[in-house]
Amino acid sequence: MRVKANAKILALIVPVLLGLNSLSGVNSAYAETQAHESLPAAAAPAAVHAPAEAHDAHGTEAAGAHGSHEEKAGDVIMHHVQDSNVLAFEPFGEIVLPHIEVAGYDLSITKHVVMMWIAAVILLLVGAAAGAGIKKISIRQAPSGIANVIEALVDFIRLDVAKSNIGHGYEKHLPYLITVFFFILVCNLLGLIPYGATATGNINVTLTLSIFTFLITQIAAFKELGVGGYVKHLTAGTHWSLWIIMIPIEIIGQFTKPFALTIRLFANMTAGHIIILSLIFISFILKSYIVAAAVSVPFAIFIYLLELFVAFLQAFVFTMLSALFIGLATAHEEHDSHELEASGHH
Amino acid sequence: MEGMGLGYLGAGIGAGLAVIGAGLGIGNIAASAAEGTARQPEATSDIRTTMIIAAALIEGVALFGEVICVLLALK
Image (cartoon, rainbow over all chains, first blue to last red; front, side, top):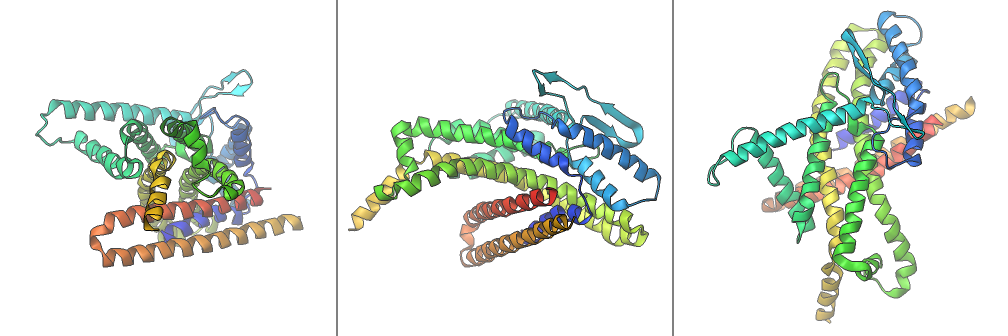
């Protein structure tokens, strides 16, 4: 865990050390996120120009060995991580995706949107195959092949994540949790294959996913507790004199939770890619085969394997925390039972 | 120009401090979890779940700090 945290920080710092000052695309992505949150995968409109320039820089750097490599390395890394409307298949050319604008909003189909579609198609195919595999066998038989793999994961989410965190009435949240787990997992893994991109490394995607969690949490709390119970929940069962402190804290807490989910998934997936590319670019910056053989390749492979683990871990953590938040919001007997126990002892 | 350099310096130092906190926190969790597992091996899965949740929450706070540092470096 500590190694991972260090790696992440390194990943965030290295581009800055490389004299990187063309990160404006990230800023515009933030601004855009705040501007219209409800558009899940809308491309950052201002970022469209920056990747194009970065792409040119990439081309010249690959061809020539002159000039300041530091800035270009940063540009290439950012170009890889950011969303763009070009699907690049490096030696074979590229596909330029159409630019679509509806009522002033940029609704272009971008690299990350395509990756999400691919993830959805993969999930449909795998889910259909697993469902057919389960249906084919009798109830006493163990499933085999792809159905077995999916069953193990689904059962893990059902028992260890949903049931143990939500408790009573977990069944109605199970479809969302399983969907979000597999979707994040496939999106994470798509970024690790050649020509792939991490859709979950786009803050718009992660924000949309956590807004789903937020809405489900709030609706489930209202349904389970009613309006009175919901308001009572905001007081956290404390004495009325503390309400002036407790109620604002609890209300802010409702919004920090999805924000933390957003930033966690986004930062983890982005940082992993940045660090792999930074390690590779060390050898280009130092122009040395020895560094490439001794540092870049082994460390990049190590981080890549770590990223495989992180892809699973972050999908699990997102699902787990979603289940935990739903469970916390709908647990109505908790405060009462504590009070009962306390009064019983007196 | 000088102000820009100081901004980068602040971002770097801030990021480092955030990592110190997160490292200490997650290290403490891991140490306690290892100890708890050694004392009570039958509770391993519960301890692991609790550990992952706590580590994820600490990591989230550390990432907030990192995001602030990145924003600082970009301004």
